[in-house]
Image (cartoon, rainbow, N blue to C red; front, side):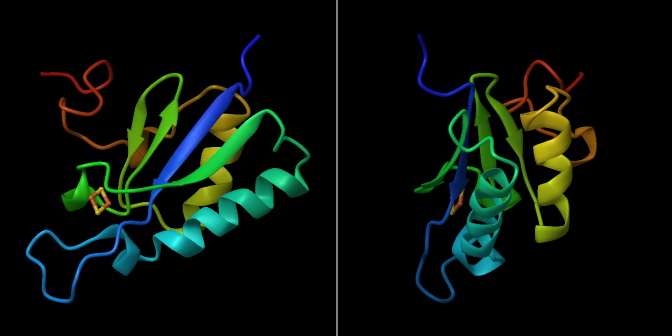
Amino acid sequence: MKRFDKHIFICENKRPEGHPRGCCADKNSQALKELFKTRLKQLGVNSSIRANTSGCLDACEFGPSLVVYPEGIWYGGVTENDVEEIIQSHLMNNIPVERLLIKDKRFNKDVVKD
Ligand code: FES
């Protein structure tokens, strides 16, 4: 039996000021992670859907970046205003939020068309 139905990893990597790749920490990712954790707990689903901090996911240019497993669906440019939609649509009802998907085949090869 698996431990969690879904697992969402939110990059909180921090790079030095002026680094050419930038970082998700400078794009509000810690607050994003906290909001996911808070809402999942409020909804009573935190024992089956887990939100965790991640280091760099190598999707820095799309940050703040996050990935949902077991599907391996990648999101980018997520704001606090998007958290509820990701939870309600994807995490609880298995419908990915199309408009927030990283539009790059390296990440979402099954959902990004040629
Ligand atoms: S710094 Fe977040 S994906 Fe690289």
